[in-house]
Amino acid sequence: MTGRRGPDHDDRGEQIQAAEREAARQRILAQAEAERIPAEETTRAVPDRRWRRGRQ
Image (tube, rainbow, N blue to C red):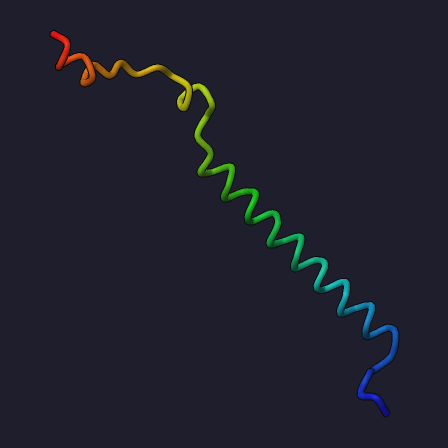
């Protein structure tokens, strides 16, 4: 015997692994969405006048 329990058990194991991968994928996507910074906030110009101090 090879220690395998048959094709039905293998299929079930693969289904469980696929479901776990999908659940992990959904958790990662949810976390990424929660931490996402809107593009409007990252592209807003912020005046930085520090470089002008030496020219005045």
